[in-house]
Amino acid sequence: MPVHKDFHGMLDGMTEQYCTGEDEETTKTETAEGYPGKTCRKALGVFYATCKEKGLDYTKPMPKEKVREHVSAILPFTISEKIVDKPLKIRGLAITAGMSRNFNIYTPDELQAFASKLVAERRQRPHCSCSRKQRCV
Image (cartoon, rainbow, N blue to C red; front, side):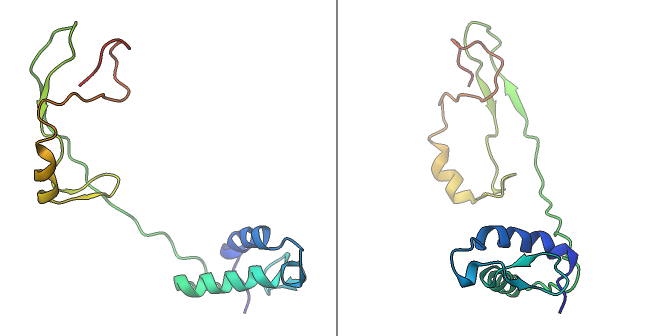
């Protein structure tokens, strides 16, 4: 069965990785129907096994990637001090239960256990606009 052109890049990568020419299995002597280049037995074996494991039919176009949606909430923060010489004290909601933008899942129990560590704690805010001598909270 011919290898669809959508899978040529995948087979190219496996050929580059596994076809080192050190022995019979890694020497580029094999051809795959529909694939323009030569490859080795090891790369073909890994290619077929990977397609089978992922449930891909290499004779048909590669399926489109699934769309991943996530929701990010804009949380209200209030600045309770406006003094230039000191770091600002900011009050607000640090995190809510659920999934974060980097797909970490936070349960209410985990957040409750961690909440006491945030009270009156100074935080370094990345990419802040304050001077190097001053810390952002």
